[in-house]
Image (cartoon, rainbow, N blue to C red; front, side):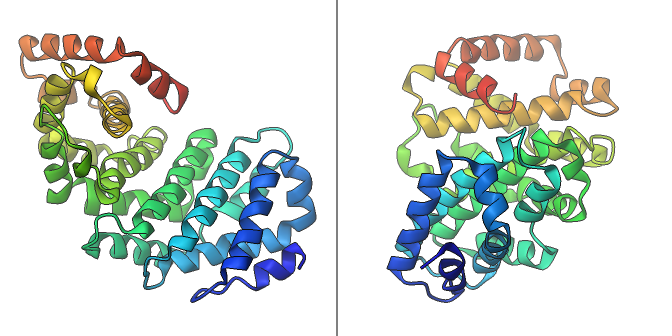
Length: 302
């Protein structure tokens, strides 16, 4: 089967292992080859697949382990498209990567909110897709003004970040000795994916979201400072999950403090006394001295 025939065989409800394996192997090969040539030759089929994936994610989801390798490989392929600066136009990238309507987004988010399985593979896969959108906005700030991207971040701000569940996850991160079991896909979606998405958008639309920044500092400012204070003394015990959570939280809070108007007021809200500010600076120094943190934070979207 050629690529177009393989794509046509992808069904929203069921796809054979053989079809998925063939497509997965093809993408693994193309990741290391000429993306621009492949896209120019197979653009229409890729367009169909990209938007079919959003439809698949938005449907009533049941865990299909056979999908995981395919989605992880395809997400990496899309990430390569985003960071290919010279040979793939922004219009082509946008047509492939941006979902067609907000209904698809709402359905995905509602499934995540309602899922009682905190390690549902949908959450893991959706996180990859929304992370890629964040990278896309970071690389091309104009993308952040597209209505569907604005909707994604308004939903994330109001339904995930300013939510008791987010505060619950932050309180979990205040434990001095974190067990690997607390890092579910759902927690990582809230703490990593949501903060990454809102950070990317806030950096280019900061004045539009000024009201959100005040709510964020009021709702989670104390928990954030507590996490940084406690975990700055445990850096030698960090695993990759806590490292990623801390890096994303620091980047997220940095943008809320520095972007847009009202910086002085936001600083006073988070650091009401000089003693609190000085303690926070010392905590950050301990964290920044941790080489894996420095590599992760400054190697992505700092």
